[in-house]
Image (cartoon, rainbow, N blue to C red):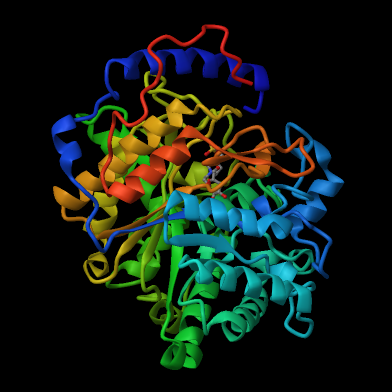
Length: 524
Ligand code: GBH
């Protein structure tokens, strides 16, 4: 999966294909509709996450996060044996970051606080003065130039001290998350008015607790990922209700959550079993989080409850591997968001299967019972998992809006969307990706009436890409990780995004790919 040569080969082939296609006009784009513009109240921003950019892993009194600890012990975890020790060095270079955000013309910056930078041991008895100052200064400098920070409390960097106690599988960690959130609201709530509790609980629990693709790499498949899900949902609600009670009356801010979803396309839309498989996938990956929070009835979706209960029973468990909420908990979680943050990158192809070679038993994959494939006729110019299929975005937005009536009253914010390159600044593929995906957002707004009010590009600059290390570059700005200055250079996609933000329209001709590209284009 992480084989660099395979990626290079596919990359080169598909870039060529993709460029040939886009030479004749951006693939599949309906140019009539590109006259739509983004409404006046639609906000544009750019996203980052603390661990992926800050570096300074042991400076300013910072405690270790589980990613620090794990990567130091297991350097082979990333293909380039890298870690987040220095990353893009944003801990020191944040003033440059702010200038870059200004150049994009966006007025919003979605970023995260590193929990162990603020609370080195994870607990509120020890608040790092320097950590607290760092974020205070950063927020104030952003606000000085009219950029509003939107702050995520947990973008995966759990303090090691708490991970050692079981992380999200330990119900007591909910208390410590609530304490951490209270510290953050006390310190910054006077100037921060939009918070998200968690980033992508599915990716975190599935890859980190159920598998070993992300830290903490527990491989507790079938049990761990559901415990993580359960206590993350409860932790989110705790923080939402605490803010509501203790802070909202005078700070008057908003608190939401960011969920992620790939679009699930049936292998054959005329086959009932493929359509059912696609729905099953969405229930087990997205609705498992969205339904407890955004539906009228709350709790896990019936589909998920029945599926995991039945599988657990068949497997000889005397209790369901998916824990139960109390009635009180269902009520606390239901409605606990002022907006729906949605991250989206790609579309996968769905068909039913009761067993696949790489599945563990028990596991979320096995419970879901859906074979997940890629459509390799779609371009795949970056990471192996990311095929480009813009219409899936519009379908996902419609799915979310249609299933959760609450979303007529509270907005959807696209908190991440983007694509990676392998280091070039002439990133025509990403220009096309952003144009085509944003075009689908316009269609969702204007033709489908989806209540989506904001878009945050992932990501401001090249960063530490978790299990891919620094091998894929998601930045609008290139970062030269070899230079001590971590020099930042705008890519063409930055220029293109700035034009979209300025004009509130997509100009598919603003940056045109060269018709012929040298064949021996060095893609790695
Ligand atoms: C987001 O997750 C993260 O929020 C962000 O921090 C990250 O930098 C960004 O994506 C770009 O990667 O098992 O085949 O799906 C996106 C979800 C999770 C997608 C891990 C890729 C691994 C391959 N990602 N997943 S697969």
